[in-house]
Image 1 (cartoon, one colour):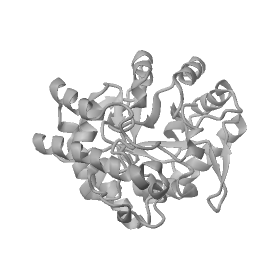
Image 2 (cartoon, helix red, strand yellow; image 1 turned 120 degrees about the vertical axis):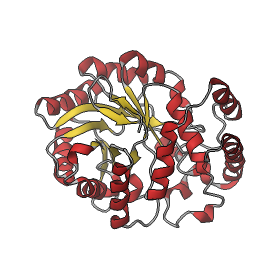
Image 3 (cartoon, rainbow, N blue to C red; image 1 turned 90 degrees about the vertical axis):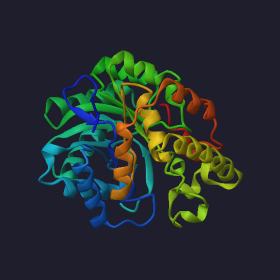
Length: 328
């Protein structure tokens, strides 16, 4: 598996990691035993970067990842996140970057993951009510205490990244990035390259749409959150389905799968990029891992980008209420 450094650290990250969110929530029913098998299979394939968060499954996802990686800690880089505050019933209470909350959230994540140190600790969303300097200051104290190794931000602006970096080195920024979500090209990738910050691309397969596996909204479980995503609704769904056909055509011409084409394009966009496609399937792990070995020529990249100009997707990334917490 091709690897790249986490920021300026000596940690090597597989360019294709594993997003674990869907193993506990958001993508319909899941079986823990199958998810654990998938995580173990990922390790066997050279995947060493696993992404979770305290809000996924209201803590259950961290417990699952911790259980799966027990006894295999030296093989895995574990990233988790704080800031999205939820009740035990899953209700959302907002976003918090308050120093006291940062420390409390970290202690709970360490316990659920059953580890002594978190490799990469992100602020999941930027708290508009708490200066980023205060939040990162509290995160930096966790580094000094040995509870966290490296710090990250998710869905932040370039200005926020610079302000945060001035307090303590930021090793990674995580944001959505794919053929139908190219906003990071508007300054964030360049800023990460300048500062030596890794860019971790989540949903690099457009929440599964770019794989070509979703042909109808009925392919999604009744409680799948994508049913409420603007890109999966009404006329937008059909327009985006036409986009996927372009992926399939380009992938067929290259002799690879749609998922591999979409992933390899993201990986090729910057030496700072690593990806964390999510799946509960060992078969999909194999397919995604195969993208790490694919090198696209400048001509191929040009053809892909001509077919997928910026803002090509119909509909916003999230429902309107959630869009306000992005680019904080």
